[in-house]
Image (tube, rainbow, N blue to C red; front, top):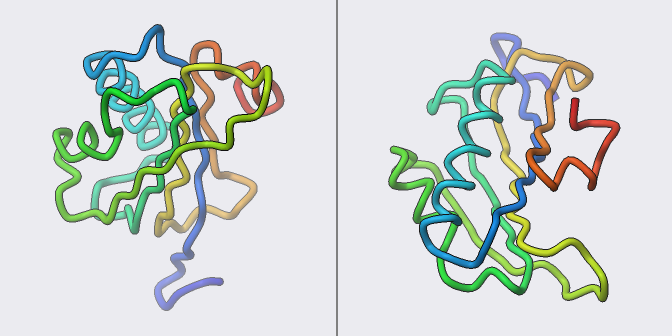
Length: 126
């Protein structure tokens, strides 16, 4: 739905696979993912409405939201949750669903799948 001034609320998805369950790796992976989502979609912090992060059940040593706050997203509502433990699902994955204000049409939103997580959505990983 377009807002006054030509902006719309859009959802941007993304995921990254990290090497191990370690707070440093979770923070670095989260930072890389958030930065790339913002870069590819030409977003500023002011464009962010909220971000929902999920992690696979094997990532339990850190919160992606804490890492995002450390990046300066201190006034953006952030939430973390755990993915469903599906047998044989990809391990060590951080996902995000960011709600943003943008003048881009839905077809121009660039979803971001990095590292091993590119296998989750090869159609969007390019």
